[in-house]
Picture 1 (cartoon, rainbow, N blue to C red):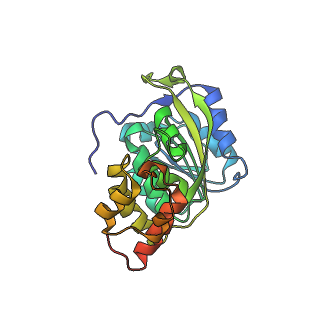
Picture 2 (picture 1 turned 180 degrees about the vertical axis):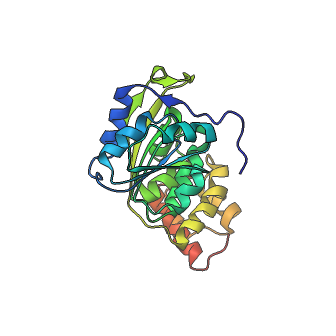
Picture 3 (picture 1 turned 90 degrees about the vertical axis):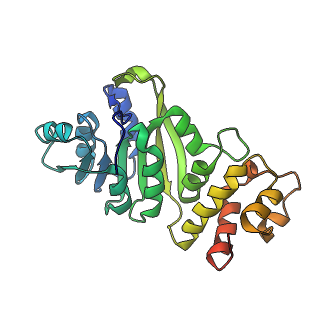
Length: 250
């Protein structure tokens, strides 16, 4: 996987931001943690104090080399693709002051990894709002559905841009995501159906379903005729995805 020159990584330098991440870890102390994008290690050291072991995955070789010299004994630093590690990690917890470029990839890959029970992510504020957006709202979309179908999502707190170096143009937020559903063949179908339906997010559900599915599923027939794709809750889309995974066509 090739990355652009600017990965969107911003280093957290404010202790209040670190405290938000630790708050997000509440109830999951003493477990193994995967940290994606540790950067200069400000967050890594604090995580290590409450975790059993930390695997810190850094894409930048120079940053990784410097990090090795400053982390405690229970931290292992590796150079690699953080999004890929989110897919294959065996640890139950993932923490990331997420490089902006990787946000969606980390979330969708983590949803597929049933080993992961908790994620605590630092995201651009708008992305955080998309992850937690409710059906019918302006920011509700495919990322909202995938996130909420598999995790209970909550914004822990907002991190002003002044808390980072180099300073980004936008604020960020810490999002806590606790798994509520295991990935199975329904997940593959959910990805397919949402990819098509949300390309018509402002269209009536019946019209979008005919374009994407060739027919209107039973789950949609009982909805008010004015229902649009953007109004569909994750559970309603999961129902259609189950139908697809059992032999329906798209």
